[in-house]
Image 1 (cartoon, rainbow, N blue to C red):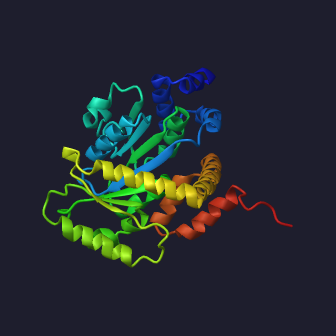
Image 2 (image 1 turned 135 degrees about the vertical axis):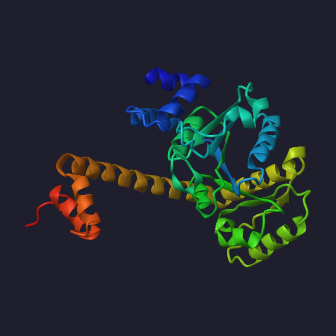
Length: 317
């Protein structure tokens, strides 16, 4: 296990792939592995890319990869895909999207299945980011599934969030209602060669005019990713946002809040697991379910009964 971490820190792609697999599969040694690599994290900048399916996120990521590599930056990409109902793995594969980067030693691309997680982000995404951070990547791009309102989860993971829209994507006001507009640090209207570009840009700017917080106004960039048009402007906007966060102190605030949230979630996860382990040891859970189904007990009383049987509340004097 320690050798695997040493290999990762020494730049082994094989070690990075194995570690992400172990994290994703909830390996029994996952905790120890993450503890070993944690002191080597905190240097990578994380960019989230989200938006509706079919908006061209993957081709946009491919173009951004080329731009970043032209500046000699080491880049990691995590593509969070829908989970296959048959294999449990990601439906879309790394090499299908970005074949020309497969042999670049300074690019590491990994697809991860959501495995039923809400929000378009795999449960293990944050831990995979830590692995790539310790692996020495300067930038980590996280591309989400694209499933609507729950996409706002990306903001909990990324330092900068890019929302991708299309002119022909239907009424963009519906996207605004979905809440996805609130999380953007940068808007990209991709496929800008299609009719309706001006209307989409106007609607975005109208919504931005209504926002009270004026510390950072998200830029609106237009791209045609299949032709590589507008990518340099997108990259410049992302760099400007990073400078804004660093100079204003917001980057530290964002990361501190992220740590607070991760610690809270981890405590909740551990407590929940301990409770369910005790429940499974002491209680016929299925029989309680049957009682509720046949209306001999209600779910609220049953929940209290479970906690009392495992002595969750403890003895009171």
